[in-house]
Image (cartoon, rainbow, N blue to C red; front, top):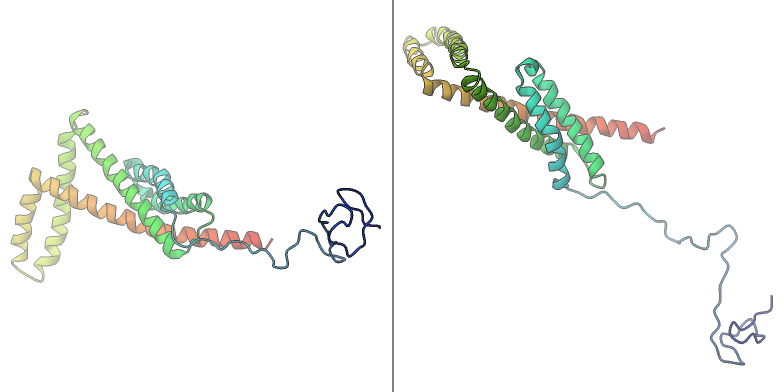
Length: 231
């Protein structure tokens, strides 16, 4: 094919870089080698590496979406037997939501434990707050204060009876001390102290189970991702 000037149309030699008639520079297009691609790069394009750390904004959003309902469900007396199920399952679901919201971040067991702990703290607050609101409503609106106090007195009495039998065998003075503690815990201030101690233990258990659920969620989603990539 005879090369022509793109400006004036004059005939050119194959080696000419400028038109001898009008002086316009000539553009050259070298066709790719056989089997090549004009748009291919000599260096293969690599997929970006996943970001390290945790996207805390996405982690907090996922923890709020899951932690609040899980905490409320664990506080309902009818569903209290499934407290561990709600908390662990909620943490696993939180990991799934986080992976969906932040797919570019690397998710390992340590990150799963931290995100699960965050969801557990939110669930613990939700559980304690729900329990407190319900007890205030039952005491002052439903006028069930006497029944609530009787229930707590029975629980405290049973707990101290078991503890006094255990300590009385090793220390004779322990029984008297246990009775003194019992008299205190049967007072209004003692009931409040017992309620705070029990709430703290429940909150700690929720955070622990949620952290375990976060680690479990990482393992489950890692297995699922690996199984899908093998298909």
